Image 1 (cartoon, one colour):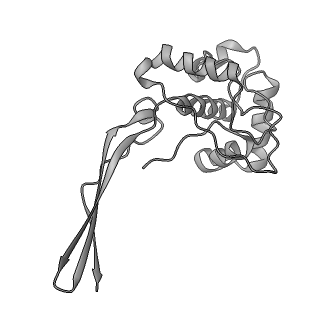
Image 2 (image 1 turned 180 degrees about the horizontal axis):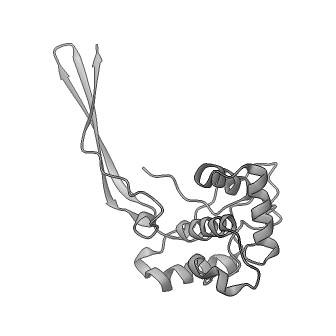
Length: 184
């Protein structure tokens, strides 16, 4: 019902920055490179959405400590293409405990507003990828009356997963019933 949240790679960072923050791709790359040089995120030139075992363990432990065991989900990755360069793991914050709202306390150099926004996006996306995904069910109804078919569906969420922990996301609403009329 909901897209899985993947750990970020450079292409996804640029897309998210363009869509969410309205930052051009070349500027997005410069900001990510700046965050890497300042020691806030891992190496950015990667196609991978996978983590090394140590980082994955740290991430899952951090999520459990911050949100509780019931919040911990499965880290999802995408299938690799033959052309992907995966020498480096996915892009993550170098220190998960460096919360975005307090990031300026951990480095000497002042960050720009865009750098803080991008760090927030990378940090939150990393955390979301380790939280449970939303779950629910969808029912489809087919009704026939005379020469007409009525197709309907209803979505119901049982658990909202990462939507419960990320205030930047809009919690999806359950859809009670949509009807489409189809002639036979």
